[in-house]
Amino acid sequence: MRIRFIHTSDWHLGQRLLLNERGEEHELVLNWLHDLILAEKAQGLIVAGDIFDNGNPPHPARKLYYRFLTSLLKSECRHIVIIGGNHDSPGMLEAPKDLLQYLDIQVIGAASPNLADDILPLKNKNGKLEAVIAAIPFLRDRDLVVSQSGETSLDRIQRIQEAIQERYEVMATICGPFAGKVPIIATGHLYAKGAQASGTQNNIYIGDTENLDVSQLPDTFTYVALGHIHRPQLVGGLAKARYAGSLIPLSFSETKDEKGVWILDFEGDQLVEARFAVCPIFRRLKTIRGAVGEVEKKLLEFAEKERAGLKSWVEIIVESDTFIPQLDSRLRDFCQKLPLEILKIRLERQGQSPNDELWTAPSLDTLDVIEVFHKIGEKKGRSPEEWREIELTFRELWNQLNQTEEPSAQP
Ligand SMILES: [Mn+2]
Image (cartoon, rainbow, N blue to C red; front, side):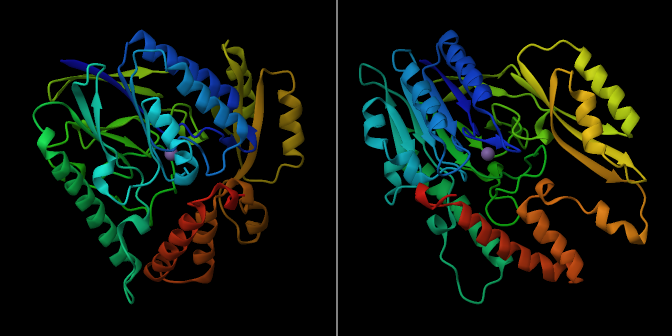
């Protein structure tokens, strides 16, 4: 018996890039995904976390999500499994859980207290078992370990890694009776050992350490559908563990990657074929860098190429060894008639002199919170080891603040 699944993740519905809404892109890409599911006659869909960009997504993002799910109800895609990511609020995702379950859409926002509840046997219309999903969402610290007094952040990281590994082993044991009969698919929203990110992704557990070594996972799992890293890839060269990556480039650092989803064919308990379906780029994001004259030339060249779709968004980095007065208005005037929109202009000083710290200091809106904290450490003259410890604690606090249970607590 053959069964086809589509594995996708990291939609980040409701995301804004430097205050710009991504709704149009998300709508286009979900239409594309809907058409793909129909064209490929996929029977299953797995969304491996970060459905929404934050715990309290705007109404249009929620509408898009429900409209997409509704559009699949009459298709052959009978099994839809959605797990929570670190950006999702488990409470928000699971609010319609019972209703969605009635429609064969399974939502696991957070790990259930009884782990066996998250093992989902998927059956066809005649009640015959087709596949089993070990639905493991993003595991929050509180799902895994209780702090031990006197332990350092580094100890904690190690204990979290061990606890995650153990969770997969326990889930594999529960799936044991199904082994050898149908595909057993585990999910995960984490940072797997050997994974390549496309830029800085600070939204990982605590610290920027790996959470799981996929090569150590039990053979029980036919496939591991991963989310969190936005670049599609096989993990550690293993055919059975993959990241699907995000559906649209979520930042300027993601523009070089192809975006898309995995189409997976299983037969018996084997993965027999995996293809990556590349999705169109509905809006191009582009970084243009160089001396100011060079930037202008590149802008013209970029604008000349004909592009379908929405207006491109551009980030400009001007390299200069002197201050350029009115750089912002000069470039904005220059681009006025070009079919693109400037989202950000940054001046990057070449070479150093002691007095230019003020104007070379990066503006706050180009840094994220963790980077700012890191820079404070550099200023305070702490030793790297000492500051790393403090930074890990800060990261943990920051992540906890951003992992709200209830949507109302989110800004
Ligand atoms: Mn993500």
